[in-house]
Image (cartoon, rainbow, N blue to C red; front, top):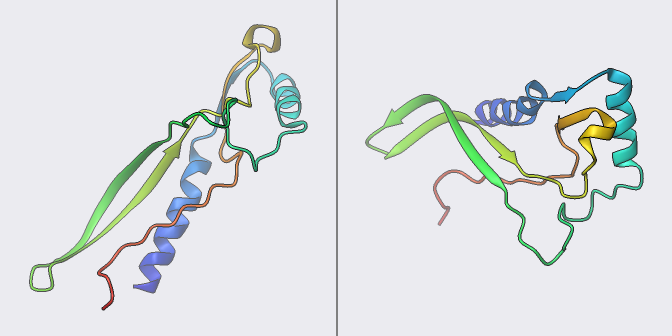
Length: 122
């Protein structure tokens, strides 16, 4: 079971590496934009302009494999990954002047996510 948790953890942490892309013109313009955006950026603050407002977070669980089913113990073992996305309002720019129209960054903020799975101990 420890091996499965390790595999799930690796899948969870490495999945965003596959989905980073930029909708822009040249690497120099993109690098310049990223430097401008992250200059004085504090990742400890919530990614909204109004700190009292609600942050919309989209969470999806993608089930990859059903590893096993034990009807006697009523136990289902699966493998999947968790995809979490949100819009950071503190990272905005004028796409026309920068000639970069979209950024999908891997992880700009420190996100702590805990997944607890299994029967409760008595």
